[in-house]
Structure formats: structure tokens, C-alpha cells
Image 1 (cartoon, rainbow, N blue to C red):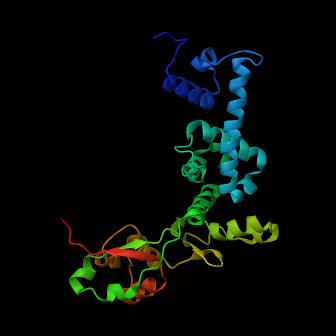
Image 2: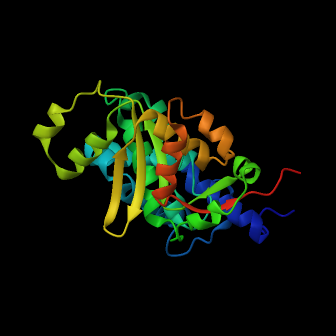
Image 3: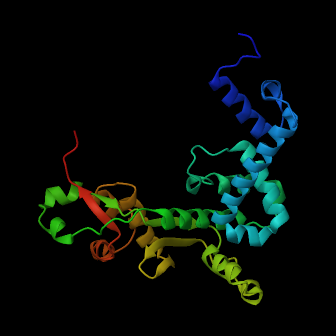
Length: 261
């Protein structure tokens, strides 16, 4: 095929590569040069693209940005964008890999809790942008037989999430966003791990610490395990009472009790 007559798909892929690797490549040969050279034209688009992705990350990870400073955050965002470009045009979904990226970034090693803060902020982002779902009517569960209950799988509301972290990131996150340096210095990093629940309520956002057995039960239920299997994950006494308490919180929106195929 004549390289000067690319298909639309070839041109799109070439421009995408140029946006990510910073090189003109085929795109530079195929983009028209007139009053503005093709390299300059591509550079404008490249800078705009990176700026949009950096802004998206800045909105999702404000505490991370405050912890490392604007210059470091922008540099890390540019490195991340080159390796993990958006998978869709909906930028609210962009950044799921950022916590893992920070965990592997050698320059961030001086802030050992940075990746965990990012993990919490990503869950906060998901909860804030989740569609509203109605809570489960518990009377529907009460009508099930014991065999049906044993195999029942609960469906989590979209605006509630769990995250386990090796550092007290709930305290760090709040303190950083409040700009309270004195409170930040007083945080005991050994007060961990933490088992967190993130929930959107009518009054805003809640990030609450749970007991480990409570968190494990919810995690099992959220992952779709049947009730009898999820109870085994609670690791404690009075698991049925614990289950009843979790059902009363309204974390679930539906259930499935159909027998396995």
C-alpha cells in the first residue's frame, strides 16, 4: 500500500502511537504540513492529550497530588499516560491502574503509603460516579426457604466499595485533604492494616473502618459467594448475627437464588 495514502484506521493508529510515544513516525509523514509543520501540529495534539489525561488523574487523586507535589504528580502522570492510555472516552474510568503504577515507581518509594492512598481514592472515585441503585427489600429474602438461602448470592449496590490497606490511609487521606500538617505528623503508621468501607450516602461520602471479620464477610458477599460460603469467611462467632447486621445496612440491591446449572 502506498504509505502516502493510508486508510483511516492506519492514520488513527499512527496518530495514537505519536500521542503516546512522543515520536512523529508515520503520522508525521501523513499529516499535512502547511503554515504549521506536521511535527508542530502533532505536538499540539500530543500536549493537549497528555494535559487532558493528567487533569483526569488530578481530579481523581487529589490527596496523592498533595502528598508528592504538583511537579512530581505531573511527571508521574505523563509516564503513566504513556504506558496506560485511556481505554474509552469516558475519563471517569481512567486511572484504575494508577495505584499499582505508583507502587512500582521507584521515585515514590520515599512515601511508602502513596499507593495505598491512591487505592482508596480510586474506590472513592468509583463510588462517587456509580449510578444510584435501590436497597434490597429484606422481606424478599425472608420468603426464601433454608436451601434457597444457603445458595443465595447477594448483589452489591454500585455505590459501596471495600478496600484493605497496609497503612492507615483513611486518616492520611482526610488529613491531607484538610491540609492539617499537625494532625498528619501525629498519625501512627503502624495503626494498620485497615479494613475500609466506602459508601455514598444522602449526606455525602463515608469512609469507615470495619472489623476484619465484618470486612471479610462483606468482601465474600460482594464477590458473589453464596451465603453459606460467605459466612465461613467471617472467622468469628455469631456470624449469623453479623450477617443480619450487614443486611440491615442496605448494602445490597438484589439477590439470585437460582440453583447452579
